[in-house]
Length: 138
Image (tube, rainbow, N blue to C red; front, side, top):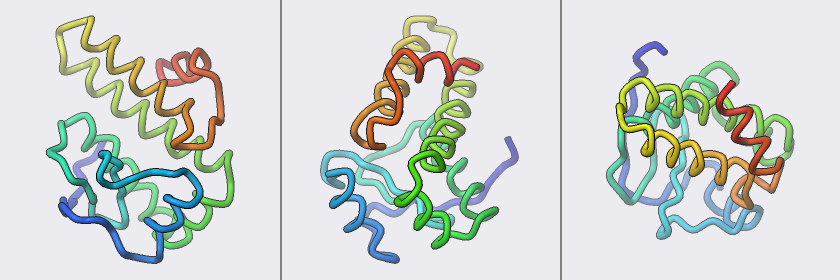
């Protein structure tokens, strides 16, 4: 993956009403570690590992290709679009971690974490856990 420029912001995002929409639609909470990427800015309340940065920079690339506000509108409105965007980001995160981590148990734990997220309420329960594992590994 190409090197993408980004800035990390340690505050809640306030652009385009994205945070409010996410709270309403997915019941997320910034204080519980949810991360938002808007344009080239990653909003978080925690330090981020390299694999998470890979995930978030995938969203930066997606948004730059699609248009930031348009991407977010479609993300909220279209389940299939949201799923494909997150699947790509989790695949990139998993593939990076798999290449850089020599501990197979940690790699497996990350895969389970990514699959739990992708198949969970945060994105609207769009697939089963088993399907998420299979798709992320492809």
